[in-house]
Image (tube, rainbow, N blue to C red; front, top):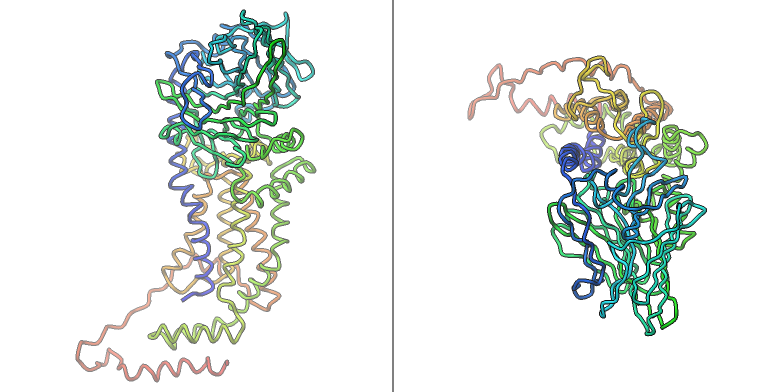
Length: 636
């Protein structure tokens, strides 16, 4: 039998069990394990330079791009600084990025993001996105030409390009690299970059061989070693690409390890690369001709992951010049910048580089609304509070109807109690009688579920926004909350920093999770505790369980939940008072701390025997029930 309290409890449990259960029992331990693995990986020296085999040089599988991934060499002993100093380079300096281009291979393999730091400390190092293959955490992008069948030399990973003396790539001045193969082909590469994160790479080939030449362009993003990933099911980290009619492809590192290369042929328009939680590197073939794409993995002492494309061959007549152009995105996945590239550069579905999820139609508008308030108030925490108020206003008619139905149910509590007592031994008749009462009073027994259920999509979407968007990264609120995307750094179990001890992950119960738990507990006190002892246990312990569950969630989400609880308490209290319901909130709170008196159970009569003086006769029961039920009839 469903009562109003039971409906509320069941709705809460069923609605959030999957999300919180995953977070508490799977995602949390997985995150701890990932951190340990990341620490172990960071102590392992990655591969040295790669003996890169250009796409098309190896035998590809049918339907693939024919690209062979770079093959890891022996383990390297160079630091990042030593690896950078080991090859000639052209500096890169823009408002958003800084680094260099490796003249050996013409690779973009040294890039820092000027606007983002490793921690909230303003003096912490800036984020390193790309690194050379000869040092730790090799991660780079490169472009080139597939060698023709006749063996004509073309620039490859070991080719040393020539740059003008003192050349420097800025957002206002491109860099031109050249290389002559000594057999009649001259290669020219012009690299430019905008003020944000988009490189434009234009390759030209002048044919002085006296005969036509056909060359296929390629581009690729290569990563050496497997990076630390968050390990959450709501976020994709790994290889990614939009393959036109073959839609979005998302391949995790784990999936690539266990499968052969994933190939896609005749892709009309798209892009591909590697994505992290907040950063990404992607190559975008330009032009109207289709291309083939491959996502691959090479195992070894240091695993290698690669996303590459091979373009349609370009025929270059004798004495003519052929050209191809590609784009390279390497930077932060800032929503406005990504959307701008999608619209201004006509990059099909480039906004999918940000993992909005299957409910993007709800998540993205929620972000845009929060971003609007952030630009106005300059604080994403304030934006979360304002969005919560708007959401409550939007769902007010539904919540109002639900609370009215709950108020009506509270009014008939005496009649419901009488019916339960009257049909205590016949649950079927008891349920029928209650349904008739609901119908008579026009009460929806499930109405109490709606205030909880309508929060679920908002809660999940807000969780997604706070978790995946870089705008929330290191976004401060007030006081001790300096990063809304991270858990509350305080904890009850070291008296909020007074004891010099760092509790384990499961005991990080900060101030805001405690506020959330208290507001949830107060909200549940608006209704009298259920009569069933089992329900009472759930009813009383649920706020405590949720406090521990949400303790490891992003602070922004916990602040939303606490603020939403506060608004719900206010809203429900006002509505119930207007409906003439006596809301004894203080009394309900005080009764929660009182022990339930034990009820003595009369002994059962002996089998086959007659009632004794200490055992009431069964025949007397109907008369006693009728007497008890009389007040209910008088009321009706």
